[in-house]
Image (cartoon, rainbow, N blue to C red):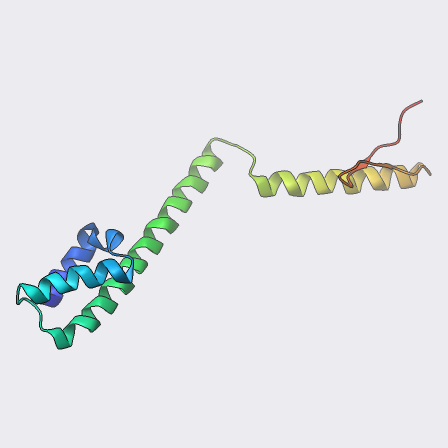
Length: 119
């Protein structure tokens, strides 16, 4: 009965609020005080609440990340990783072009390669 109550509490969203061990202990202590749970079982329930809360939070975070990735993809925006990858690729291509032209590419303060100045 109590295990069902705790399971329902976690699935109804209490798990998101009871992620910390301290919060879970307070919740379980209240159940012990009300006589709905004995002291011997309380630590196991605290551990279960914390674990289920963390699992629920991880699941929620992963879903939110997935929704955000999908939204960014649908908006056709460039991600930071794409930007960094493309910037590195451009730098490499500029270096290769300069090498083929027999010129030394210029370097910026940030270490990025600039194409040789046009005459």
